Each structure stands twice: as structure tokens, then as C-alpha cells.
Image (cartoon, rainbow, N blue to C red; front, side, top):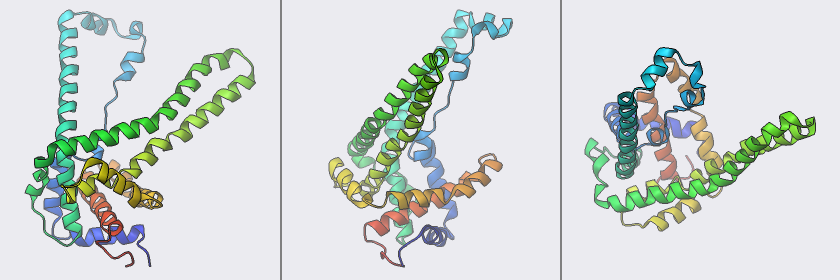
Length: 272
């Protein structure tokens, strides 16, 4: 029988048995250094304050924001946050490969140590090139989605003035925009194996890893998506623990994804 989501999860639990401590530390540090998908994709939103009418703010707050020293401080904090985010994005490219290499070894039955997390800094240039390459192409796949969203937003004011037909068109465009959101997700699943390939075979080039990833994921994107979605119940439980549960959930998920990579590359039997 072919591997199913529960089979990947079961193997992940087996391999993590007795190695939860190291795995937790590896994933936690990788996340702090921008080397996991969750950390590199999580951005805080500060748009609510910007979107509010300044006159609705309390007088004391308006006076505080009018102080040049406060404005300078806030701008400095913003610039500092951007610099740190950029640094983590750059450093995280090599950390991500070390993180993937850890879980490849773990799921293959090895006993990798914590230091493997930093083992791919010797190919830092290629690691960064791969991350930028994937980011660029996922962004390009996002452009149709952004175009549809922009068209929908531009038509919304007109829909309030004109007939219900215009409102129907606008709603239709919004539905199309929501559907188009799957494009960048689909694109990211095309390239998801590339960091694993470079982690295991550092001699491979960026384009070689990307092309091999597209071949490996041909017809398997839905299966990996279902594997990731099979953790949704654990995600909800982690929310109830105010995120503390993620310390154990993240290694569990990365281990299962590592097993998926090994199966697709023929390093684990296609049938269980």
C-alpha cells in the first residue's frame, strides 16, 4: 500500500522517540534564526492604527505622536525591525538547509546532532540564491491574485453607487481573487523539495534543485497538502496552549515532511 498521511505521522513519532529534546532545540533555534517556514512567513501587521482616523485617537495619544522625539524613536524601531528581519531572512537560508538536513537524517534512521543545523553555511551563497529564486517565482505566481484583488477593490466603490449588477460583478471578482490565492500556494508546493535536495546534496546547483523538485512534486502536491492539513487538529490544540504546544508540534510536522521527501526520492520504500 502507498504511504498515507497517518503512515508519515506514525514514522515521525517512531523516529522522534528518545530524540524529542534535540529535535525541539534544533527547530526552536532554526525558527529564531529564520530557518523555518513558520518563522520566515510570519509577519506582524501594524495596519490597524494606520487605517484609523487620527481624530478618533485620544488627545493624549495625538500629542504623544506629535512629539518629534517619539516619531524619531518609532521610525528607529521600525528601521531596526526591518534590518533584523532582512538579516534573519539572509541567515535563515543556510539555517533552513541545516534544519532540513537534520530531519532527513533523523527520518533515515540516523542520530544527527544539534551542530548539523549549521552544517550548510559553507554553501551560504547557494542557499541564499535558492531562497531568493523560490521567493521570486512564488511572487510571480502571486501576481494574478494581486491583480484580481486590486480590480475587486477598485470596483467596490462603484458597486455602491450603481446597480446591483455592478455589485454582482464586484463580488464575482472577489471570488476569483480568493480562488487565485491558491496559485502562490500551488507554486510553493512545486519548489518545496528544493531546500531538502540542496540540504542533502550541497553540490547541486539552484536550478538543478528547483527542476528536480518540480519533477518530484508532479502529481504529489495534493498528497503533501493533505499531510500538512492532517495536523490541523494539533494546531488548534496548540492555540489553546497559547502556542506552547508548537514546541512539540513543529518537530512532529517537520519530521513527517522529511519522511515525505525520503519516500519521494526513493530513500524509503514507496510502499509500506
